[in-house]
Length: 118
Image (cartoon, rainbow, N blue to C red; front, side, top):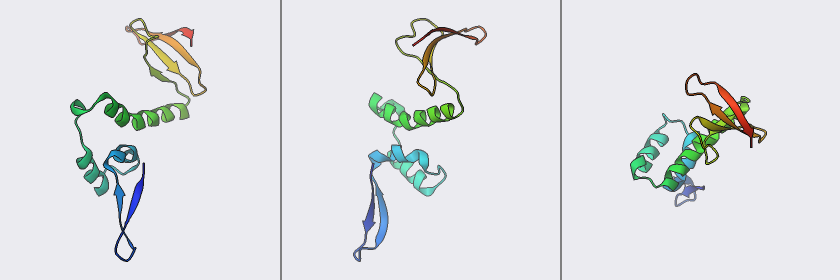
């Protein structure tokens, strides 16, 4: 991502250029109530129904990275599913240190039982 300073005739800074395709990377760090955020959100808005998988993934990445950091900063695992989860209720728990475990969560009471380490 790159921000460019726009210079006037006398080489004085007159503005900042933000490429529309770079906005999604910058947006999470900008105050959502600011005029800049409101303007850029309006210029870059695209319904999820109009996005490709890659666009949805790019939009979600800063959010998921922030959520992962918050979880790990609080010594909590992140949980997700992939092809290893072959039964209903199976999830993978990944911890800050890199250890992963396959867990089966009861759909009745939410209790979890470790199936095996990964």
